[in-house]
Length: 99
Image (cartoon, helix red, strand yellow):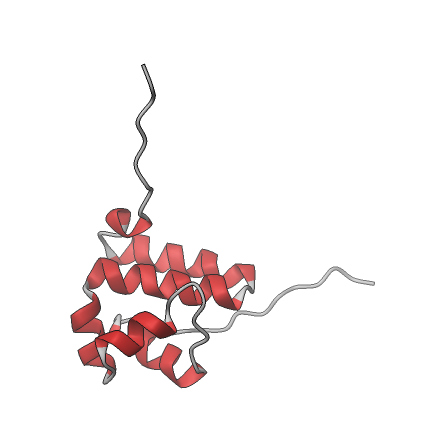
């Protein structure tokens, strides 16, 4: 008997603000711009892409494109999406070991 699998969709598990913030924080820590854009797309899907696009002042199609695996959103787009998600970016100091 063959094992049947389904695709994993992290958007299905982002059902509260803490989970969303943790998911995006982890993505930001990677420093990988493509992964961060994809993570924003996952969160936007979890919250409702149409509503996020409207709140960000973007078309749904352009938001899908910008936050796709091959997308490269402008930083202003990222800031609009973050605000539409009800989040804010913040900076914390990175402590480097004494040399």
